[in-house]
Amino acid sequence: MPTRSARNPIRSALAVVALTASLAGPVLADEAPGVTLDLAQARVLAVHALREGRPELAMGVAGGLLKADPEDPLAHHVLAGANARLDRPGAAHKSAARAYRFSEPGLDRFRSAQMAARMALAQDRPTTAQFWLRRSALHAPDARAAEVVARDYRALRRINPWSFRLRLDLRPSSNVNKGSDTALQIIDGIPVTGVLSGAAQALSGVIGSVDLSSAYRLRQNKVSETRASGRLYVQRVALSSSAQATAPSAENGDFASTFAEVSLRHSWLVGGAPGRGTMSLGATLGESWYGGGGGFGFGRIEAARKWRLGGAGYLRLDGLAERRFRARFAANDVHVLGIGAEWGRELANGDRLSLRAAWRDTGAERANGTFTAASLRASYAPDQALGPVQISAGLTLGHADYPAFRSGLFWVPGGRQDRSVYGDLNLFFHEMDYAGFAPMLRLRAGRKHSNDSRFEMREVSVSLGIESVF
Image (tube, rainbow, N blue to C red; front, side, top):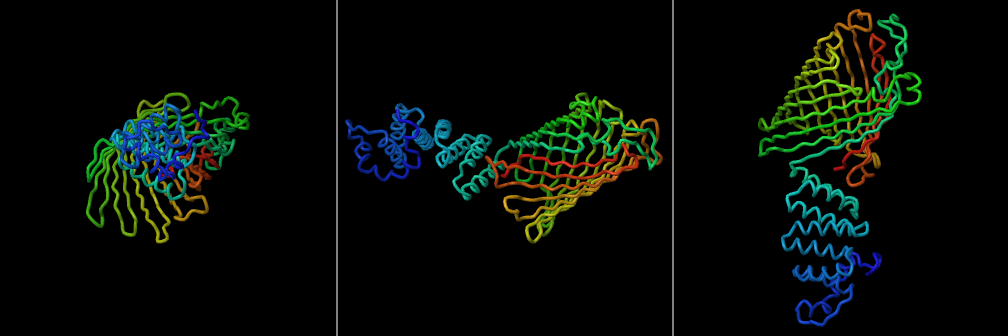
């Protein structure tokens, strides 16, 4: 049995197919019962037979090669091609997968993964085809091949009724618990209750999160589609040694959070040019947990209308109504009404600009859970990358008003008012991809001002996540 280094790779066999004319002629004519071929000649013959439209002969020769070496990548590749010619996509896919497994990294694996993707699609298995396209991206020989892989992947995303998204995030933060900047509680400039507990103060540490979502297209036609989706978000916290010293009774699990939801959404095209756009209606049910204990259940309905504007722009209006129930704390037993508006456009130089305004009214069983909040966010994304990095940035302003708020034993005169400002910078290293995934670095900093110092806070965080290049 030849060693791995002694095997001719797929590209070598393809390069010498022309040499088979004198070698393979009598065998192809089935007129040479006593002909004996060495392994190198048999590999060339197998490729030549496949090229000449003789898949049965190619399979026979490939079978002989596999008897000599079950891990011969060229033989598996020939079997994949022959089965594809014979309209046997299942067998072709299995052979292509074996060819990938036994090939050396590089062009041979690229070709095998591409074959496996095509055969998976021929079996109406677009998710499997997407998996193999990502594997082929690992071995794309040049930038043009990588772009073809990305284009094909986007096409499969449109075909596939299933869609998946996984976002992993790890970020050191100066305030993992949304705690106060100060140890003193001061309301409207007057100290009231003395020193805040350590757990109520800002604690540093590391936040890790996993955000997994999946959707399935139930029906689709030229003007509408209906999707069912689910999402699971898990966040965990590791307190720093300084945070543990500040709040010795606090545990990591006190700041853990999880929520899960299922949704149904229907979208359709509305309007005619130039105002053609989309309309959508959705309903969601979910559950939220915090601190290792029960949180609350929630139900939500949403509606949105989007218009296409001239100059590659758009306008979106949306609204929601949410009811939370089975709340662990009465302040979370609330109903929420919200509206929002977003405008965006692509500028003449290709940069993208968007503005979003949102307003929410929350009513609760307890006064501390009743408030109104408004926010304004501006986002900007240059079209041109800065070297290997694609940059985007945003700025968010917020205001919240609690008309009646109780802080410990005291009612805050005139209620509680919060003002916040946060900025973020996102750096996407799109050229450092692995199987179509690349690192995303997010820098976030901000501060919230409040007339109750318990809610005065600032935060600086740096997070590292993974995003899809496709």
